[in-house]
Length: 314
Image 1 (spheres, rainbow, N blue to C red):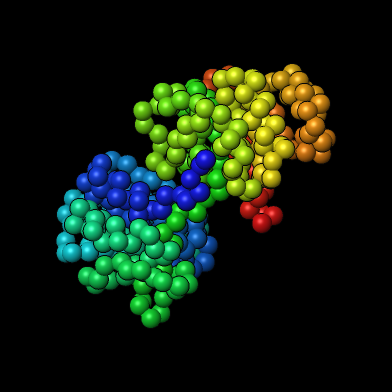
Image 2 (cartoon, one colour):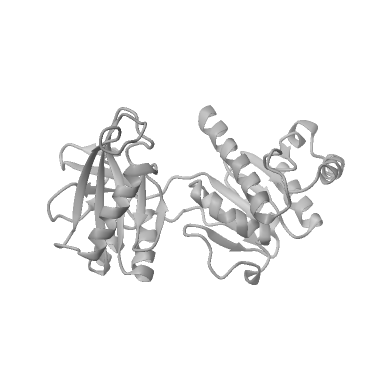
């Protein structure tokens, strides 16, 4: 069964410290007016890589430049700085708002504190001084007047998405889904079917019978069925459609495959209104072609539309 607890940013930072030596966490701690992202949005920056985004553009470029300067020369027990920017005048961006960005350095010296905070609901991030981040307890997310720090959740928010199949389409698709800040559970029948390295934050789930994983997925999950076997595709779709609930279900394939599956699933007892929720072919019809990268982009674009629809409807 899939692990219901998704890795938080602390776990990901600790992984990056182990692999890259150090990482800077950049987070929006203040937003006034129009800005690309909301307060609390964060990204991680290493010497050669980034994870997540605070909105892109000139602001993010400058934040990355400052973060890498911090990585080159860390100063003090808890190196941090706050960057203030008016997005229009200072950054040349079309958004006219103002932001404050907290940059925090984390290296091996901070590992013990990070390990102690990994199980917390939320963490208070001081904006200045040499105090370490600390357990926020039940404090509300956002600026904390008492500590003059920013309270941020440890968990990285994201809707669960279950991708069944680690073939060439799955491999091209996985990075896009992680970039969309989805909680990716990547399912296949054997570990050797997965690539040696998967996108940061993705989870490989090995299951001899993937329908068992589908049966235990949360009711707000997205499902993308792209396995190597049509019979397995049908079994997974049947389990999802006959189960306790799902947000969206997409199946790779042609219109002919869609018609055949709808007929067989209908005969298997799936009612027409539920069958109507099966999207096949999954993805945007306007993105054509059979190259894995094009197919993956088509599916990812369709998933982004699902995200927007679900966010708007609550």
